[in-house]
Image 1 (cartoon, one colour):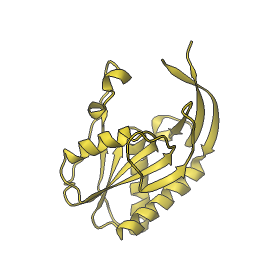
Image 2 (cartoon, one colour):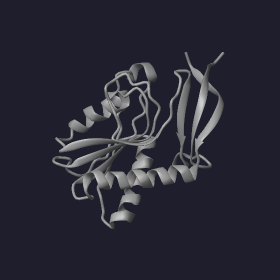
Image 3 (cartoon, rainbow, N blue to C red):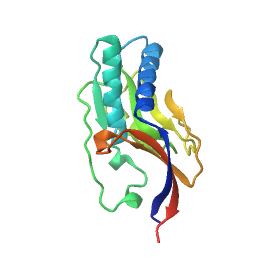
Image 4 (cartoon, rainbow, N blue to C red):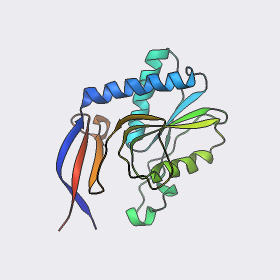
Amino acid sequence: MEMKTKSETCLMDREAIQRTLTRIAHEILEKNKGVASIALVGIHRGGTHLARRLQKEIQKIEKAEIPLGFLDITLYRDDVGEVSSQAILQGTDILFDINQRIIILVDDVLYTGRTIRCALDQLIDFGRPKQIQLAVLVDRGHRELPIKADFIGKNIPTSLSEEVKVLLTEEGEAEDKVIKCEKVAKP
């Protein structure tokens, strides 16, 4: 059954998102004692934009370049046939050796954990990282798999009838914000 959203509540505005990404960048640097062996990998769609922003924040703090890559998990999904009859590929782009690196996997919303499982499967196809850590802007709960983020921007408890959307200017939105919406069935 297709769903559409009814009412929405703004949970984070542009400034809150920026402050949160700055904090996560500092947490990543503190946990990993700098940038020596880390790389960022964003999950398409929202995770790629957040990974770029985190890369800029970390580079501003450390004055050092860090590798950045992107994963398109479409073909790794366990529900690819259910979501759409025509998969839209956005491309995976990892142009650095992930072996013995600490990979910070970046996504916008952590929900059931299935997206992250797909990303882990695909990432391992590229090599053997020293460690994989997970950074998310929002953790909304309702895990179906034993997956936990290392860096969380904001925990937003939700019901199963709600969804959380991260709206970013890179995706054509007028402004950055995080909203919580009630789902209602389409007639």
